[in-house]
Amino acid sequence: MHDITKNELGAAVPPCGRFGANAAWYRLSLLTYNVLSALKSLALPPALSTARPKRLRFTLFTLAGRLITQCGAAVLRVGAEAERLAGLIAARHQLALVAQALPAG
Image 1 (cartoon, rainbow, N blue to C red):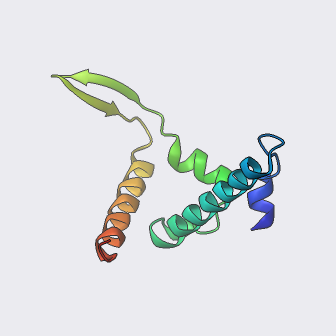
Image 2: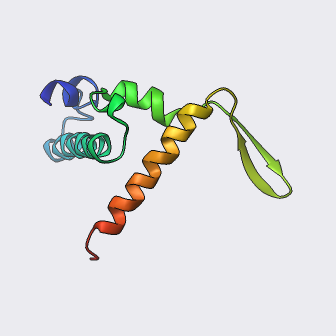
């Protein structure tokens, strides 16, 4: 965990010389690590359960497509990435189920 937060989530390079800002920066990187860990264990397919943040970023968060407007609506056209898109839709559905199971408040 320490290696991932320091080397892949930017915790090794504090933003300035002020202690409070640097502490907030480190807490933000830990929060990011926790969110990515929850995402991997709750929603993503087992093939991505051991993925590092860089792999998640390139696999999930960047999706090549062309954004066009058609009949007044924005449409994203995806080429050969349809199978990966199906995995994203399944992950979003799984996250929706987890969100519904959480208590209100």
